[in-house]
Length: 215
Image 1 (cartoon, rainbow, N blue to C red):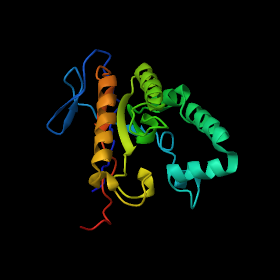
Image 2: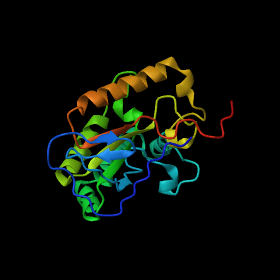
Image 3: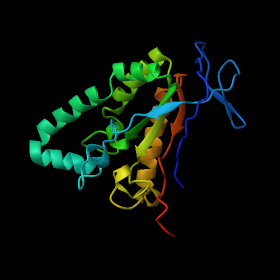
C-alpha cells in the first residue's frame, strides 16, 4: 500500500501565530486555536533525494547510481563539491517564500537516510542532513508554512525500487541492523525538532513495500 498524503484546500487558511502544536480530532487536523485546517502543500522532491526520472536519466535512476555516475565523470572530490552546491541551491529561502506566495500552507520534505549518517561509518548518526533540515524548517517558520518530514530512502530500502535507493529488495524488513538505524535516526530527528511547532508530522517510511512483492 502506498503511503500518500493528499493535500486539498477549498479556501485560504491563516496559520496560527500562537505557540502550540497542531493536533488531530477524528479525521480533522486542528490548529492550536481549535479550528480545523485543510493542508494545501507541495513536495520538495529531487532535493535531498535526487531521482533519475527528474533528471531525465534512463539508467542512473537511484541516488547512489546518480552519484556513481557523477563520480566516474568528475572524480570523488568534484562530485562532493557538486552535491554541496546542488543542495545549497536547489531549494532556497526564495523558493520557500514563493511557495507561501502561491497560497500553499505546508511542505513535505523527502530525505535520504544517508544524509544523516557519517560517510566513513554508516551506523554513526551525523552527516549534513540535520543542517539541511534546520535550514528549511527555519525558512518555513519565517513564512509560517507547516513542515512534514519524510524518510524517502530508509536503511536497507523499504520498497526495493530506485525511489528508496536500495538494492532491488526491501531489506529493511529483514535486517535488524537496518531497522535499528532507522529507529536511531528518527529518534534523533524527533529529539532535535521536539519543540518546533511548525513541524507537524513525520512520514516514517515512504511507500513501504511495493505492491509487486508477493508473499
